[in-house]
Amino acid sequence: MPLRFTLNLDGMPNGEDKNWVRLCATVDGFKHRYGSWPTEIRLPALCLCDLKEHLFTPADVSRIEAKIRLVVDEDRFRATDAHGNSSDYLSEDFPDLAHEDTAQAWFDVEPRHISQDFTATRVSGDSVLTHVRKLLESVRALEALYPGRSFTLDGHLVGSIGEVLAAELYGLKLLPASSSCHDGVCPTGREVQVKLTQRERVGLYEEPRFLVVLQIDSSGQLREIYNGPGPGAWNAAGPRQKNGQRSISLSRLKGLNKHVAEVDRIAQVTRPNWLLGE
Image 1: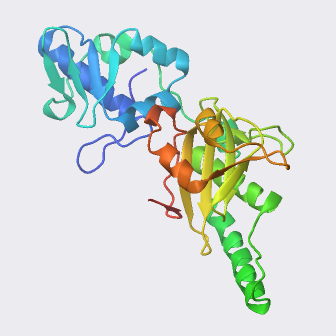
Image 2: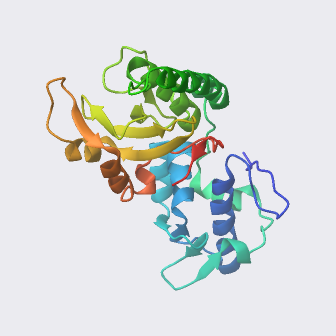
């Protein structure tokens, strides 16, 4: 099946499979110029993450990597071989090749789209946060009526809010509320525990496979504090307390988050304006 993509005003592919289009175009350009397939493709970390997290199953990624080495390079898509030949995406035109001579045919894999099973569980983050902000207005009103008393959102309420917002952000299929340890599964099958807090610490009862920690401020804006393998956060947490939790500060999680490789993060499927950057 031929690649399907759209172009933006700069002539760059911008469809769901844009990074696969760019990779194949880079390989096609190399083959067209040198008459042989490259042995290595260099590409930005986020693009590699997109390929591994969203577009292909682990089995298909293995099939791609059996033919070409994927190397992180923040410059641009570039194909090379052992003889020093090189061709990059921006310097080549899209060659007009018969399908059987294209990189897509050579790799013999097809990109997938996020399945209906996952998209069906996604909600409107804007809609959720509209209600959350009304709750926060009530919190501020109560704190004004009772100075010195804290009405911070916590417990099951804030936990459920975090789960539905994470479903929107990362395309999670949410697990039943009674599920142990994990709250959802991302489109590539990774089990994820979600933590949302207004405080400066979170508690972990069990070691998750992957962990996403979000912080919500008093105006209803969110920040991603940690996104990566669960064992790293679990091993850095304090000893188990009387309530069964192991506590870890958000500042410690921020430090750990700086060292998480892009391929080890849960990829976002949307970039909403209510998620703040650092």
